[in-house]
Amino acid sequence: MKIEYLKKLKENPINFGELLNLEIEGITLNEIANLEQLYNTGKSFPKVLKELLFLAGQYCYVCDYGVNEDQKELQESTRQDLLDNERIISRPFYVIDVYSTERFLFIYLDEGENPKIYTAHPSGETQDWITPLSNLTIKSLVDSRIERAKRGENPF
Image (cartoon, rainbow, N blue to C red; front, top):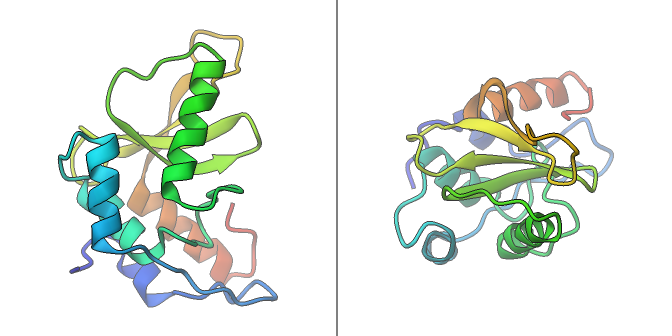
């Protein structure tokens, strides 16, 4: 796959700030196609999401996939959390990061090739449980977290 958006991630596969120096690990194009079938009715994911999954869908030092074994489990666990909290996201979406046990970052799959990121707090009390994460896109989020990691800071 030709990488257009996440060149910085491709060029910086190892988090040198960590003691273990773990390297990113991607998933196959077939696995991505299966996820597209499940979560986007077979339509192609945005290009930047496909790049993220291809480069680092199994492990990524700048995206936290939680305790989930794989991308499907990540998607299903957050969807279950939505059901448990009687919340609905009516548009096609994909979770890219989880933080704490109550929040996650996601993109809508119908907002172009490098969509902006939203944060969801399904157990939140307010009606505004979904909010845009400033003007960040997957590319800008990944790039800024890589820069933090390169400085020896926590990328999150």
